[in-house]
Amino acid sequence: MCFAIPMQISHIDGFVAHCQAKGVQREASLLMLQHDLPRVGDYVLVHLGYAIDKVSAQDAAAAWEIYDQILAAEDALPSGASSATGG
Image (cartoon, rainbow, N blue to C red; front, side):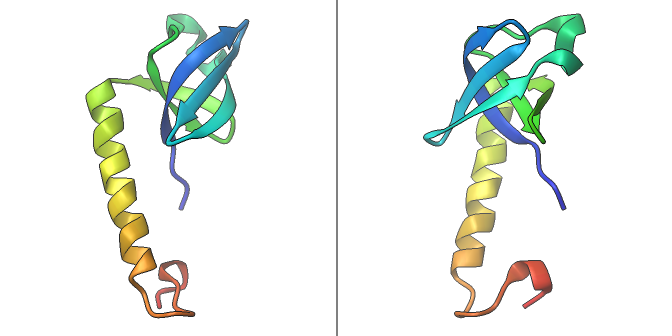
């Protein structure tokens, strides 16, 4: 399963957005959003190096809350177990 990660745009160079989330920085192509280009400060969903959709700050925060819960649940698994393999 793949996730698109909500990230905030810190600056833009042409069709490349420099994004950040939770202390991680990534570059994302804006070519898929060229019909409605985001601006600095906007939140985008980043998947495989592409910004695929704009989202609100509230939706980005809600997604991160869910991702944090998933990570916490995975950390609570017994040593050697993995949620990706079903336990």
